Image 1 (cartoon, rainbow, N blue to C red):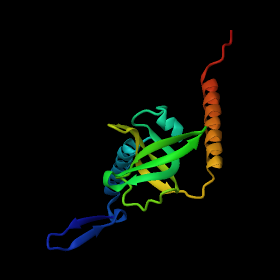
Image 2 (cartoon, one colour):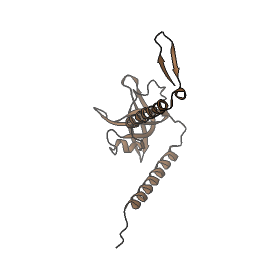
Image 3 (cartoon, helix red, strand yellow):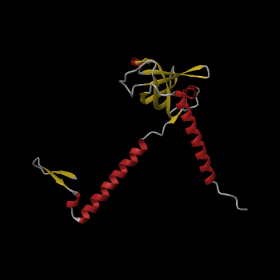
Image 4 (tube, helix red, strand yellow):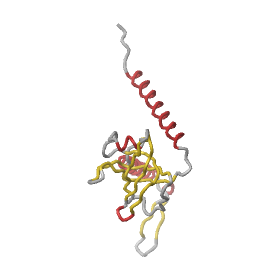
Length: 176
């Protein structure tokens, strides 16, 4: 439905099915055009799908600035005045710390010692190094981290196999 001002403060509602045939067709195509145009620009603005990265991969520099990632860890520190949190994870007898910029997810109720899952973009910050600008920061206390790590590894294996099969199918076979 469309609305037009009548001039005296009255609003006239025009239904598309009450229009003559040629105008109805124009109305339909214009509506479809605007919807498709808005979806095009909306999809262009969406960030890339985030890939799970282990915290030790984030701190080792395996991810690049601007990458969308998902990672996890135990909240060990929260500095609300700086909008900064630190997630910690133990791996191979080393403690790994991932710094999280929390300005986009505040206010939130931090629970020190709880497990968190973060979705965000990697950026380099002065004095900090690699930092994740969080778009989503969820408390997932109670999640079995060993099972999560196993699931991430299995997902990676699946994607490698799928990409390998897609690469093999894309290459033409030699018929000579």
